[in-house]
Image (cartoon, rainbow, N blue to C red):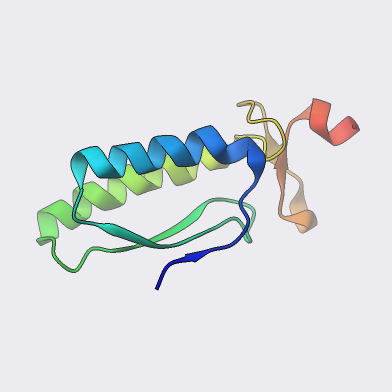
Length: 98
């Protein structure tokens, strides 16, 4: 089952880069869930065919993109976003003002 909630348009490049990295390094892994409902990128994958060392490498790869989402504006994609607390949104100052 693949579950994709609407993802922020500002994360399009981030998500595309994640998919490309997964296809290059882990073509056998399927993304089963990708959301932003917690204010950061949340990704689940089916890694059942990987050995423990490969799972570790995959986790590190995905975590790198999750970490990038913490500063990537959900509105415009700039790398100057910050957490807006209760709203569970990452936005830059320009998008926050508009």
